[in-house]
Image 1 (cartoon, rainbow, N blue to C red):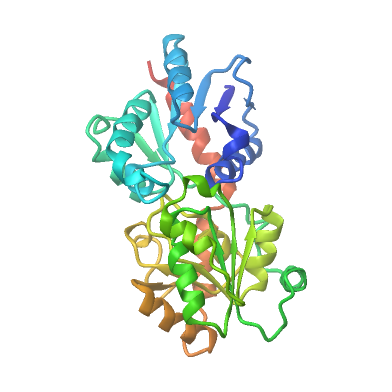
Image 2: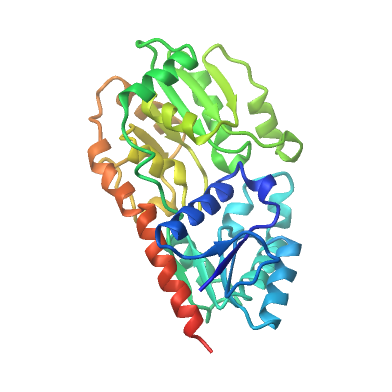
Length: 336
């Protein structure tokens, strides 16, 4: 069994959540001693394809003609696409059609969550496809609570011990809730806000461009950073704020849980099966509720839920991801 992990434009997408997911796949396969390659010129038994761009579609179609088994990884849905870049809403139906065209080439479709699985099962053309939910995973040996790393973060970004620091993570796209993040920074000048992540503003919507160009004394745009800095930030901040509007999984919130970081997320369908409000996670529906809960969390009026959230991170351990992928590969090779 040899797997080709294929991702079109890997250098371009490397800084995105998708790029992180592919790195996790590599780690997961190595943990299970599954031979793999990133080189499409090498021979392979299974094509595990992660992208839905034009070149990806034709590569998968060619592989199918050669009799190769295909595992199509559905990282994207119409639902998470349409609140992203400029003109995304206007082109979302076309993108959905194209996603179905690509994903239907898979002998088995893998997607990160039961939520995204349900979405795909309702797409006309994928109803009869075998779809398996497997998390993108998290490396619990890397993302964990570490006081020293938190101190490094505060020193690097010039925060004092007394500063209350709120972290956001994501590309410059509307779906990530970046507009609301900036609005909350305006409403709460007594707290420090810092956003990690970057994508070209040429493709961003007008509200996102306006948000990113906002200059406030308590708001820092840190840009793209390596995962070592994200780990430091999650250990050093007082709150991880995840105001995302739509996800197929949302790895940063899992990383926050692994680091036992206080967190506040938007109350959206993707999180219904994972998190219960006020039990193992705090949720908010709108700006007013976000503002209210931020104040209560940072002043101690709401108790910390980090110990109750941590088991969610353990469930998505990358070691388990490797085992589940191995099961999928074994199954797809048995199919005639």
